[in-house]
Image (cartoon, rainbow, N blue to C red):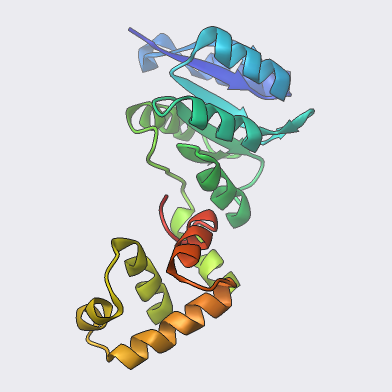
Length: 206
């Protein structure tokens, strides 16, 4: 049984190209198209596709809104975001909104097909060719040092300051100093806020 795909893009040529690229041999079937955000909502409700391929730039709003709405509606739907480029901020925005994958429109169609298949298999696992680089860019944006990033990544585990110090072979005072720097750079006051900001910025997985 073929997986059902909905294409959302305001350019007819893009939609046509993707439709032609998705063949029964790939076990992917295009069940509908939408050219704007309003049509996207209606088509998703009507077709209940296994995956959507969506442009971020729609004439009546952002594709990110559709992505967030779709993810809140279904944890099993594959969501592949398309952008004209692969800027770090776009990739992180797709990750934050709940997309399964990001693909630049300049990428070969084989990359898009692979991303759609992967999104259906693992809808909650985000993939992008430049994800690691994009996260590193976000780290630089906040000015976090490698050690601060290391400590930030431990925070969601719930480890205490003492446990973090033991894990990293640091003194408790040193860990506290790094935590203070992390909070200051992220503009927060405590661990929970730091984790939330870091997740929204793509520094930590959701």
